[in-house]
Length: 221
Ligand SMILES: *Cc1c(COP(=O)(O)O)cnc(C)c1O
Image (cartoon, rainbow, N blue to C red; front, side):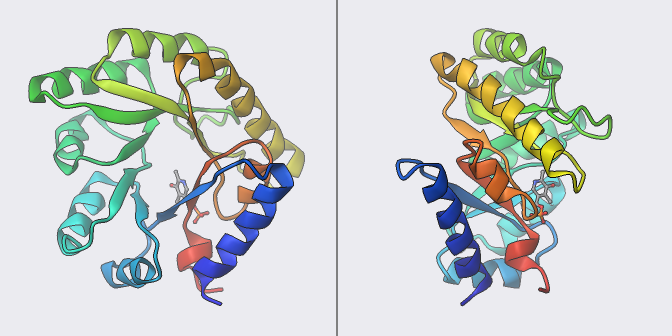
């Protein structure tokens, strides 16, 4: 079995344990992968890839222009990189991390006459090193972006699980994000991006429907 097939088997097992009606999609995080490795995974059927640096996203788009890849942006976005990100026209921005960033993106999008699908990032583990809005502020900020930034089409939430081996803490960060997600469904939230190589099964058990998998697909083991 390829690494992709092995990952799909694990995803499928967790998905069925959660609900047979639940649909889960994988974004292959290619930040440490070469264009050739991405091409290999593409040949196996993978279509969605994610990058965390605007520069790398543009470079890989250029290298792989022959393949109709769905590119996701998952990294911290600095405001001086907004234009370059919009030039790349990503399928989905996972890492909308503040109201200020939303306003800045919206202004540039309006100038271009474009829209961008995005997820609000929640700092569910409250780690200072992580981006995203606080769980307490999430609902209000989500509603304000939906209201004030019409060129940004909010689709849901993204979070990074707690950086620890303590499964209870990881589960708590996913459970918290799931509760906020459920509250935002009336506002149209339908995408819940959470789960990485080390914690995707736990994320699926908390309703994740978009996984960001890097090392399990591209790593050595
Ligand atoms: C690198 C990265 C991932 C993938 O991490 P793995 O542990 O390699 O699966 C997922 N999300 C974000 C935001 C990342 O930066």
